[in-house]
Amino acid sequence: MSPADWVVLTCWLIFLVSYGLWRGRGSDSVNRFLLAGKTMPWYAMGLSIMATQASAITFISTTSQAYVDGMRFVQFYFGLPVAMVILSATAVPIFHRAKVYTAYEYLEQRFDAKTRALVTAVFLISRGLQAGLALSAPAIVLSVILDWPFRLTILVMGGLVIVYTAIGGIKAVTWADVQQMIAIMASLSLALVIAVRRLPSDVSFFDAVRIAGAAGKLNAVSLHFDWNDQYNLWSGLIGGMFLALAYFGCDQSQVQRYLTGKSIGESRLSLLFNAVGKIPVQFFILFLGAMVFVFFVFEKPPLLFHPVELAQAQARPEFSAVQQNFDRAFAARQAAARRAAADPLAARDFADAQQNMDAARVEAEKLAGGSNDTNYIFLSFVTRYLPRGIVGLVIGVIFTAAMSAISGEINSLATVTVIDIYKRHVRPDSSDRHYLAASRAATVFWGIYAAGFASLATGFGALIVAVNQVGSLFYGGMLGVFILAFYVKRVGANSAFIGVLAGEAAIFAAAGFTHIAFLWYNVIGCLVVIGVALAVSRRASAPRPSM
Image 1 (cartoon, one colour):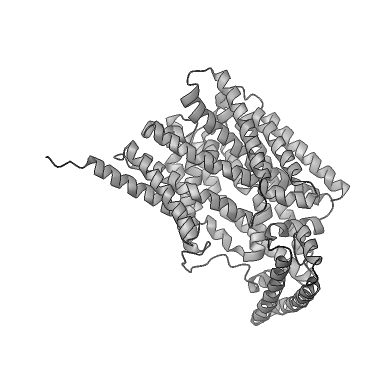
Image 2 (cartoon, one colour):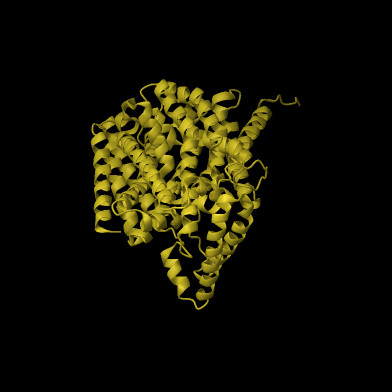
C-alpha cells in the first residue's frame, strides 16, 4: 500500500475506536454496560445486527464466493425474512417481558437450572469457536495483504476490540457497528463502480451482465432439490429459516442486540429492518463478486491470487508449462466473452475456455501445496486496481469489520459468563458495582481467548461457509429447546434436557457420517430435540401398570 493508504487506514482505525468509546460513555452499571440501559433506537439495533453478520467475511469471502461459484449463495438467506417475522411476533415480546439479560435466563424460568446450564454451555462452546474463527480467518488474509506477521495482525485487532468493548460495553459496540455498516456499503458500492468503469470501452455494463450470465455467475436460484447441495431454493428456505430462527432467536450475540431496545416495538423494527434489507444487501455483494469476475475476464488475473503460494508455485520447474496453458485459456476466454456479449450461442466456447483456466489453476494449487486461494480474490482486486487512498479505506473497513464481529461476540460471551454462570452459581448476592467489574473482566478474558485461539489457526477455505458450518453444529439443538419453552407447555425440564442432548448427538452424527448439506443440520437438530422431548415426556406421564 502507498503512504496515503496507510494514513487513511490509521485515521479510520482511530476514528472508529474513538467513536465507540465516545458513544459508550456512561456505561457505569450492569444494565447500561450489558443492555445499554434499554435506550437503543431500532435503526441502531438493525444496523448493528446487519454489521455483525457482515463482518470482514462479507468483504473477503462473499464476493469471492460469487467469483468462484456464482450468486447461488444468496439462497442461503431466503428463509431469513420468514424467521424475522416469526421472532418479531414471539421471541422479542417474550424476552422483553421476562426482563432477562440473556436468553438462557428464560430457560430456567421455564424449565430448571440444569437446562439453562446445558444450553449456556452449548452457546459458550459454539460462540467461543466462532469468535476465534471470525478473528483468525480475516487476520490470515490481511496479514498477507499488509505484509504483517500473522500474530501481529491478531494482536492489533484483538487489542483494539478489547479496549472499546471492555470500556463502553454494548452501547459502544452498537454505535461503532452503525458507522461500520455505513462504511461497508459505501466501500462496496465504490468497488462496484470502479470494477465496471475499468472494463474496456467497448464493453458496457449490460455487456458485463450478459458475460456474467454466460459464465454461470448469475445463477441466483436453483430449483433442483438435493440433500447434499448446500445452496438451492429448498435448503435456503427451510434450512436457512431454521438457521436464522436459531441465530437470531437463541444466540445471545443477536438476542442481546434487541434486548437493548427502548421498547418491544423498537426491537421488532430492528428485526423487520433486517428481514427487508438482508437479501438485497447480500444480492448486491454477490453481484459485485460477479462483476469482479467479468473485470478479470479482460484484465488478466494472476494464476493464483495468494501471493505467497504463487511464489511457491513459480519456484517449481513445472510452473512454466502450467502458466502457458493458463495464458492460452485466458486469451480464448476473452475472445469468447466478446462474442458471448452479442451472441448467447457463444457461451459454450466461453465455458470451455473457463474450464481450461480452472484446470490450470488446479495444477498451480497443487504446485503450491494444494491450498485454496478463494479468500484472496477480492482483496487482490482492491489492492491492485483501486486508487490510492481508497485502498487504505477499504482495507481499513475490512480490518474494523473483523473487529465489529468480534466485539459483539466477546460482549455476549461476557454477558452469559457473568449472568448465567458467575452470578447464578458463584457470587449470587454481590453488588451491581461488583458485577460491572466482573463483566469488564469477562470481556477482557474472552477477547484474549479469541486472540489466543485465532493465533493457532492455519487457514480456511471460503470463510463465509466455514463460519456458518460451525454455527450449524449447535444451533439446531438450541432452537429445539426454545421452541419447547415457548410453545409446548406440557414438556418438563428433564424431557427438554434429554432432548437437547439427543439433538446435538443427531447433528454430530449427520456431520460425521453423511454428506447432507450443513443447512439441514439445523432442521435435524431442532426436530430431534422436539421429538425426543415429547417422547420422554409422554413416557414419563404414562400411567404405570399396577402390580
